[in-house]
Length: 134
Image (cartoon, rainbow, N blue to C red; front, side):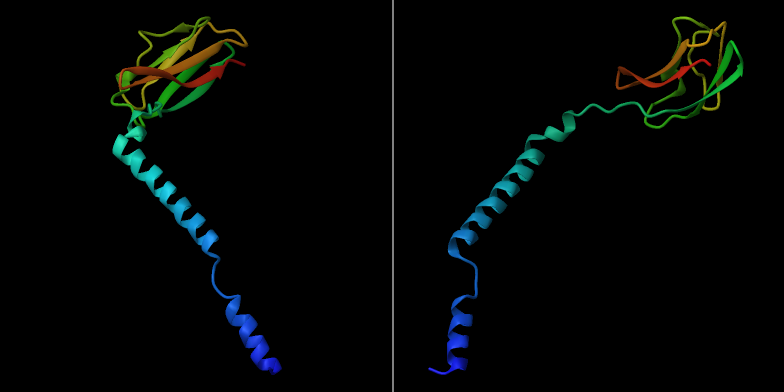
């Protein structure tokens, strides 16, 4: 047997994937496909709650006063679903915005007091942003 014949016989016998590896790959692909299809069929992704996404900005006008402005609604239905609260400061009005661009003044604050902006999506309130007075 010549060197060329030996080389060709070794090369042709070592080509291809082992049957065991082929079966393992096919089983893995089947399991992954079954999991993806099962997730869509059972609707598991639809039960995830959505957090409120609202744009607000804070402007500290003085040492004890902060203006909170609603800059965009995001996924919140209306501006009335966005409110400003504080345990230590005094919030003007009912603390709810009337429109995008609206400003709510928070006064009689001291350094370290917190102002919280909450929004409601699908009946569930969530904290959108907090601000600590300087």
